[in-house]
Image (cartoon, rainbow over all chains, first blue to last red; front, side, top):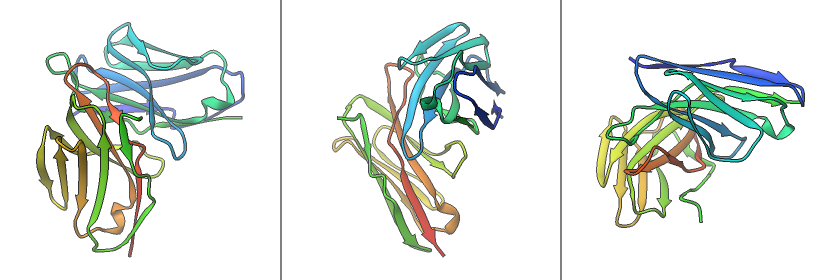
Length: 115
Length: 111
């Protein structure tokens, strides 16, 4: 069966510090991978998605970046965190069929607080 | 106009009640419809998945899709306190790899 891991689970960082969140998926190959941010009381905001190693699509302009160094690894980074980067970060995966993805599964999330 | 609209609630019902959660959408190209359950401080968990129109039942949960009205519903029968969570609807089309989410409805089932 497939499993998705995220770490750390909780993170408190000062403004201006760097960030690295990691997501790995087990039990599947060539998944699509996604990073979302969920602010308190709000919906899911798609930040990045990737259809393959080194292929990253960005949905919103921001000081965050993403990388996919391996097939089942997705990393979210920032060089300098802003207060507005606080939120609940979710990694998700899906298995594309005939070039499209029809459903996706989420990791446990990382709660980031920027002070 | 947002792609997907969902009443945020909060919704509070007594144990044993039938719960109806709904989403409307604007893009007629959506073909795949999902409901997720999200407990506080946890990642969303896939609850129901439906392709195109029709009904799908899984235990106490029934998902309905009405593409002509661009309206989807999730019904929970015999609601339990453990059903207390936020429910997110989501959908996607045939053309890409993106998913569109509602903002979620917060449900509390009172014992």
